[in-house]
Length: 222
Figure: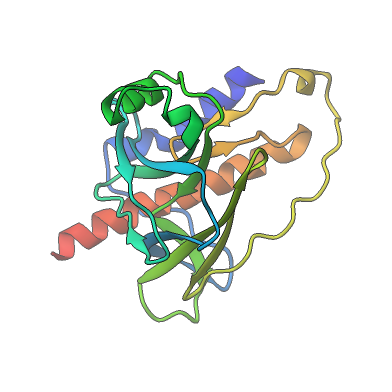
């Protein structure tokens, strides 16, 4: 199963490396837009240090890490390049104090040696209702809480829609016992089980290809 997922993932992105091709059409009634992201924290959120991780995909360059000083006032976190993805990482302050300084902390993050962290992914592209006239929207994400289960958030902005709850999945293949999370630069996506995982992968590839194409098209207009 892992080999099949890897092969399909490579096929989905192979064309992007050599040509600036349009993405598959978005769902009916939807369109692709570029997203300018900004992030804030609620007044009562405390006890955590926040770091921005910037990754490029496909690989090549190592992710970079920058400490953020977040407040109730939104901070822009632009994804400033093509095929670039951002995570905001929450680190318990008690854990951060175990390191001698920011540089040592960031080096430990790069080596995946910091415990108790939580991540919040930001993508530069989204599908929104085609009633939205603009090709670029601004979304503000407010971190409302951080606990052992992860980061809770509220997102506001033109065209944003809360994701629908995931339908329960059922095991329908013996191979699915070995399914493992598939890590992408922007987030962790769990492979859907059985016959539906192909559709999930195709949807993810379509959205990401849409982002590549939008960014490329925007740059040509500049």
